[in-house]
Image (cartoon, rainbow over all chains, first blue to last red):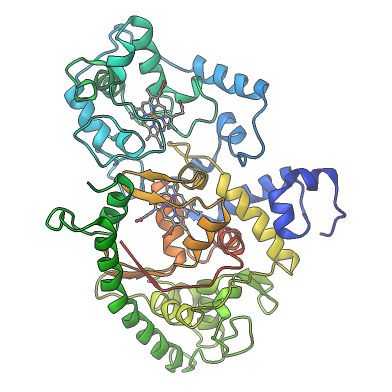
Length: 207
Length: 267
């Protein structure tokens, strides 16, 4: 399909420039890419094809960063994700930091190569510095070293921290951090445990 | 003291620190590079690949020497630097691995399912694709990347590949861009190339296929994408699928202008 350069084509920008001329509108391209992916992946282990079905948040966050989110859309994403957070019925937000440390270290879970019967890890260390002892940490997220020492352990901080792990996008639209509770990667107890890892004064995070 | 980023590079490269804490990290890295330059095991795959290309095989007892990789039947030199590209005989954009499978079917008479039974090798069970790709890409070493996007289907593949790059999904909400959208980031100690920037895209693309020290295998670009999708918690990217070709077109085109330099050797 040949088209003259249109306003949408200019908006599509990066692809259009590299491609010389855009042949599809941005929306058409999104639709077509999804169809293409649906026929190009096969189910394997626990990774079924429904993993390609995006929720509203994923759809809105699938844009190149150059096409910045409007304030209004960002607020909409955060509101929807905030509403999804379920706090523990027993009101307890702090679990066992030692178990939290193991969860933060483990990168297994949800890959087609992983055993679905085993509990998932959270791999916080993949993206964050947490304790001083662990030097093998990533930098996709900010350092969380001394997180609890710096912020204290007040009820609002506990709720924010548990909530952040449950659904990072309740506070930062399109965050690169997984929504561990919302997407059922971690159990309630596991989220309590990593919350303790961040906040417990005895945790290595706060030494 | 060894600066953290340096240490990260060295650890990622599999260099043991400690014993040689006396010498500077620069010297350590230089030593590592030297060791690699002395011999890249990828050469074993290259040699096997050249043999496979010339061997008469399959129901039609034919070699692959008449396979057209885009620059005319049998022309291997530099062909990889212009792929993926549109092939009129198949009316489809194809990357190298897909084209090889096509030639195994059309020239050698294999059924596609038989030809693609083992696309990634393991131990003594080597994949013909990895060997053939090693040889063919080695014949493009030093050639400037030039994915032209002259055909409308090539431009479409690029546009869809870009969409895929930013497509977030699965239980972790990951997209390629989650791990490869910013500069100077790393996961654990592994440096992550920023594939949205010219320099990062060029360096990453022009160094695949690669011999993976940690696996003792020669890995192709199809493997790289498949394994990143595994980490992305997506289902299994089908070998030679249109999505794999679209994404490869996006990444290859973004590497245009750089000298191709693979098979490389990696961690």
